[in-house]
Every structure is written in C-alpha cells, then in structure tokens.
Length: 260
Image (tube, rainbow, N blue to C red; front, side):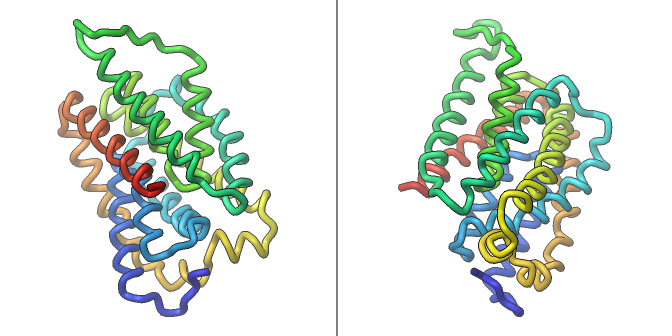
C-alpha cells in the first residue's frame, strides 16, 4: 500500500500532471483518460490502489465538465451503453484485486486498434466499407467500457471508439462522453464498496490518507477542463476525429507496452 502522510515529490508531481490531464480529458479529449493509470503506476506499483486513487479525481472532473456540456449530449448513444456498463463495472470491480489484467489489456488494445481502423475504412464517399449502426454496438461498447474502467480506468477506449464510428460533432461527442463517464464513475465507486469488504477496499483500492495529503492537486482539474473545452469549440470535426484516433492508438500502444 502507498499510504504516506507527506507524499514524496515525485508522487505529488505525477498527481499534478494527472489532475491536469483529467481536466483536459473531461474538457474534450477523453481519450487521455486511459493514460492516467499507467502514469500513476510509475510511482504507485499497486494497480488496484492507483485505480482507486483516480476515481475521486475523475468524479471531480465529471462535476466540472457537466456544467460546460449540460444538455448537449446525444441521449440515443447513452441509454444502451450506460445499462451495459453497470454489468461491466460489476465484473471488473470483482476481478480488480483478484486477477491479473494482462489479457484484458491486450484484448482492449487490439479491439481499439481494429475499431479505429474500421472507422477510417468506412469514412468518405469512396470508403471500402459502409458502416451501419446496430443496437448491439452500444451494448458491447458499454459493457467493455465498464469492465476496462473498473479494472484500470481505460473505459474511454471502447466507448470513444464507438462514438467515433457514430460520427458525432465534436461538442456532441464530448458531451455524450462526459455524461457516460460521470454516471460510470459513480456506479464504479458504489460497486467497489459493494463487492469488496471494507478491509480490502481501504487497503488495496482506496488510500484515504494519500488522498487527504494530495487534495490540493485537484485544483488543476478545472484548469485542464477549461483548456479542453476551449479547444473543442474551435476544432474542425475532421481534425478532432484525427486527434481522438491518435490518442486511442497511443493508448493501445501503451497498454501493449505495459504487457511487454
């Protein structure tokens, strides 16, 4: 466990960076979210504790972002994924402190790479393939996002890939993603408390003393959120999709590198 009354400088510096990245992610570049857990594990080797430490930070980011994107989401792309994500979170929370995550990391990375490739094969008038939205796409994206989010905060990869293929505007894309993960993080916190006995929860998942000592790092979350929101409002849809695709592929490469 990484509980300290006075955090070392390296941990505090990483937490400041993560707070800014979480704000930026919730402001419009949500594909940055999966990068946070690997970064935190550089100074906190227990993956379960890293996930638990980031959940409150994500919730603060959600609260800030909801104000910026209120009622600008696409409800049709929320209903099925949110319902499926509950079951994914339950499975992922149960496995978090019980099983290694190497297989899921590899599967998630390969799924994201394939989906981003599929998106670009179906883009444009002369596309090789024609995408047709199906109800099961939302169910699958939500379940996988819930599972990956509960295990190592990487739920943005499957859900954002799903939104990317659906071709929403940058604002609708971001607002829909913000609402989905706002709901998901509260579900994740509740399920963590429900499935894990208190001794396990507060020794292997959530380090309360660490959070209390680093509360001041949360101040960078609104800063990152404002910058992300400012940029999203000014990016052309094609450029926004390209940035999201690059971030998704970078996350996939990082997941595979962690396994290697």
